[in-house]
Length: 192
Image (spheres, rainbow, N blue to C red):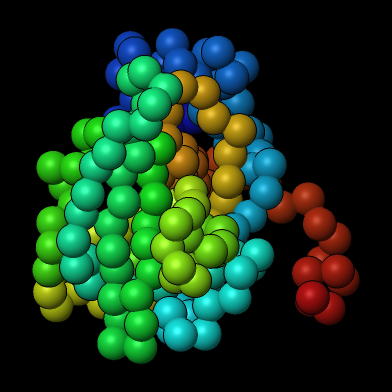
Protein backbone atom coordinates (compact mmCIF):
# COMPACT_ATOMS: atom_id res chain seq x y z
CA UNK A 1 0.00 0.00 0.00
CA UNK A 2 1.37 3.41 -0.99
CA UNK A 3 0.51 6.72 0.62
CA UNK A 4 -0.76 8.03 -2.74
CA UNK A 5 -3.18 5.10 -3.22
CA UNK A 6 -6.89 5.75 -3.11
CA UNK A 7 -8.53 5.17 0.27
CA UNK A 8 -10.21 2.15 -1.41
CA UNK A 9 -6.89 0.31 -0.91
CA UNK A 10 -7.62 0.16 2.82
CA UNK A 11 -9.22 -3.09 3.99
CA UNK A 12 -12.95 -2.65 4.54
CA UNK A 13 -13.31 0.50 2.45
CA UNK A 14 -15.61 0.11 -0.51
CA UNK A 15 -17.44 2.61 -2.67
CA UNK A 16 -19.90 3.67 0.06
CA UNK A 17 -17.32 4.15 2.80
CA UNK A 18 -15.00 5.95 0.38
CA UNK A 19 -17.82 8.42 -0.36
CA UNK A 20 -18.38 8.95 3.39
CA UNK A 21 -14.65 9.46 3.94
CA UNK A 22 -14.56 11.95 1.05
CA UNK A 23 -17.10 14.06 3.00
CA UNK A 24 -14.41 14.29 5.70
CA UNK A 25 -11.73 15.24 3.16
CA UNK A 26 -10.14 11.77 3.17
CA UNK A 27 -9.45 10.54 -0.37
CA UNK A 28 -6.01 8.87 -0.18
CA UNK A 29 -4.17 6.61 2.23
CA UNK A 30 -2.08 9.63 3.26
CA UNK A 31 -5.26 11.62 3.99
CA UNK A 32 -6.48 8.81 6.26
CA UNK A 33 -3.11 8.63 7.99
CA UNK A 34 -3.17 12.38 8.67
CA UNK A 35 -6.85 12.44 9.71
CA UNK A 36 -5.93 13.04 13.33
CA UNK A 37 -8.22 12.30 16.28
CA UNK A 38 -10.02 15.27 17.84
CA UNK A 39 -9.59 13.74 21.30
CA UNK A 40 -8.57 10.59 23.14
CA UNK A 41 -10.69 8.51 25.47
CA UNK A 42 -9.08 6.79 28.43
CA UNK A 43 -10.44 3.26 28.59
CA UNK A 44 -7.37 1.84 30.31
CA UNK A 45 -8.90 1.13 33.74
CA UNK A 46 -12.01 -0.77 34.77
CA UNK A 47 -13.99 0.82 37.59
CA UNK A 48 -16.28 -1.17 39.87
CA UNK A 49 -19.90 0.01 39.76
CA UNK A 50 -19.88 0.70 43.51
CA UNK A 51 -16.99 3.16 42.94
CA UNK A 52 -18.70 5.21 40.19
CA UNK A 53 -19.10 8.92 40.83
CA UNK A 54 -21.56 11.24 39.12
CA UNK A 55 -20.04 13.59 36.56
CA UNK A 56 -17.04 11.40 35.72
CA UNK A 57 -16.12 9.21 32.76
CA UNK A 58 -15.57 5.54 33.49
CA UNK A 59 -15.23 2.06 32.02
CA UNK A 60 -17.14 -0.82 33.61
CA UNK A 61 -17.05 -4.57 32.97
CA UNK A 62 -20.31 -6.29 33.85
CA UNK A 63 -23.11 -8.63 32.83
CA UNK A 64 -26.37 -7.45 31.25
CA UNK A 65 -29.27 -8.22 33.57
CA UNK A 66 -32.15 -6.94 31.43
CA UNK A 67 -32.80 -4.83 28.35
CA UNK A 68 -35.76 -2.48 27.89
CA UNK A 69 -36.83 -0.17 25.09
CA UNK A 70 -39.31 2.65 25.43
CA UNK A 71 -40.81 5.28 23.17
CA UNK A 72 -40.77 8.85 24.33
CA UNK A 73 -43.44 11.46 23.77
CA UNK A 74 -41.35 12.79 20.95
CA UNK A 75 -42.42 10.90 17.86
CA UNK A 76 -39.85 8.39 16.56
CA UNK A 77 -37.48 8.85 19.52
CA UNK A 78 -36.57 5.69 21.41
CA UNK A 79 -34.50 5.04 24.53
CA UNK A 80 -32.80 1.67 24.94
CA UNK A 81 -31.70 0.82 28.47
CA UNK A 82 -29.66 -2.11 29.71
CA UNK A 83 -29.26 -2.87 33.40
CA UNK A 84 -25.65 -3.99 34.00
CA UNK A 85 -24.28 -5.60 37.15
CA UNK A 86 -20.74 -6.47 38.18
CA UNK A 87 -21.17 -8.05 41.61
CA UNK A 88 -20.67 -4.75 43.43
CA UNK A 89 -23.79 -3.00 42.17
CA UNK A 90 -25.92 -2.12 39.17
CA UNK A 91 -25.86 0.70 36.63
CA UNK A 92 -27.93 1.57 33.59
CA UNK A 93 -26.50 1.88 30.11
CA UNK A 94 -28.54 4.24 27.92
CA UNK A 95 -28.61 4.54 24.12
CA UNK A 96 -30.77 7.03 22.25
CA UNK A 97 -32.32 6.09 18.87
CA UNK A 98 -30.29 2.88 18.58
CA UNK A 99 -33.11 0.38 18.08
CA UNK A 100 -30.87 -2.00 16.12
CA UNK A 101 -28.92 -2.71 19.32
CA UNK A 102 -31.92 -4.30 21.00
CA UNK A 103 -31.34 -7.54 19.07
CA UNK A 104 -27.64 -7.59 19.98
CA UNK A 105 -27.96 -6.93 23.71
CA UNK A 106 -29.16 -9.96 25.67
CA UNK A 107 -29.41 -10.78 29.36
CA UNK A 108 -26.42 -12.80 30.54
CA UNK A 109 -23.95 -11.23 28.08
CA UNK A 110 -20.70 -9.72 29.33
CA UNK A 111 -20.26 -6.09 28.32
CA UNK A 112 -17.50 -3.52 28.59
CA UNK A 113 -19.03 -0.01 28.79
CA UNK A 114 -17.46 3.44 28.62
CA UNK A 115 -19.23 6.75 29.00
CA UNK A 116 -20.15 9.64 31.22
CA UNK A 117 -21.64 8.57 34.52
CA UNK A 118 -24.51 10.41 36.13
CA UNK A 119 -27.60 9.65 38.14
CA UNK A 120 -30.24 7.68 36.22
CA UNK A 121 -33.37 9.56 35.20
CA UNK A 122 -36.05 8.33 37.62
CA UNK A 123 -33.59 5.74 38.94
CA UNK A 124 -33.72 6.62 42.62
CA UNK A 125 -29.98 7.25 42.96
CA UNK A 126 -28.85 4.53 40.56
CA UNK A 127 -25.92 5.41 38.28
CA UNK A 128 -26.27 5.50 34.50
CA UNK A 129 -23.97 5.75 31.52
CA UNK A 130 -25.86 8.31 29.49
CA UNK A 131 -25.01 8.18 26.72
CA UNK A 132 -22.68 5.23 26.26
CA UNK A 133 -19.72 6.43 24.18
CA UNK A 134 -18.40 2.95 23.40
CA UNK A 135 -19.05 -0.64 24.34
CA UNK A 136 -17.90 -4.13 23.49
CA UNK A 137 -19.83 -7.36 23.91
CA UNK A 138 -17.48 -10.04 25.24
CA UNK A 139 -17.59 -13.79 24.96
CA UNK A 140 -17.70 -15.91 28.12
CA UNK A 141 -13.93 -16.54 28.07
CA UNK A 142 -12.82 -13.37 26.26
CA UNK A 143 -10.27 -11.23 28.08
CA UNK A 144 -11.43 -7.62 28.53
CA UNK A 145 -7.81 -6.41 28.57
CA UNK A 146 -7.67 -6.62 24.77
CA UNK A 147 -10.29 -3.84 24.61
CA UNK A 148 -8.64 -1.55 27.16
CA UNK A 149 -6.37 1.36 26.35
CA UNK A 150 -6.38 4.98 25.31
CA UNK A 151 -8.52 5.16 22.19
CA UNK A 152 -8.67 7.90 19.56
CA UNK A 153 -11.95 9.75 19.01
CA UNK A 154 -12.35 10.99 15.45
CA UNK A 155 -14.62 13.64 13.99
CA UNK A 156 -17.02 11.35 12.17
CA UNK A 157 -19.89 11.60 9.76
CA UNK A 158 -23.16 9.70 9.71
CA UNK A 159 -22.55 6.16 8.51
CA UNK A 160 -19.00 5.85 9.92
CA UNK A 161 -18.42 4.62 13.45
CA UNK A 162 -15.45 5.22 15.71
CA UNK A 163 -14.67 1.51 15.58
CA UNK A 164 -14.53 1.57 11.77
CA UNK A 165 -12.27 4.64 11.71
CA UNK A 166 -9.95 3.04 14.30
CA UNK A 167 -9.75 -0.18 12.27
CA UNK A 168 -8.99 1.75 9.07
CA UNK A 169 -6.21 3.73 10.78
CA UNK A 170 -4.72 0.52 12.24
CA UNK A 171 -4.79 -1.13 8.79
CA UNK A 172 -2.98 1.83 7.22
CA UNK A 173 -0.31 1.81 9.94
CA UNK A 174 0.17 -1.95 9.55
CA UNK A 175 0.47 -1.90 5.74
CA UNK A 176 1.89 1.53 4.92
CA UNK A 177 4.18 1.96 7.92
CA UNK A 178 7.32 1.18 5.92
CA UNK A 179 6.58 4.14 3.63
CA UNK A 180 6.83 6.55 6.57
CA UNK A 181 10.09 8.20 7.51
CA UNK A 182 11.09 9.36 10.97
CA UNK A 183 11.21 13.15 11.31
CA UNK A 184 12.28 13.55 14.93
CA UNK A 185 16.01 14.05 15.52
CA UNK A 186 17.89 11.07 17.02
CA UNK A 187 18.74 13.03 20.20
CA UNK A 188 15.04 13.63 21.02
CA UNK A 189 14.11 10.00 20.22
CA UNK A 190 16.90 8.70 22.47
CA UNK A 191 15.94 11.01 25.34
CA UNK A 192 12.21 10.27 25.22
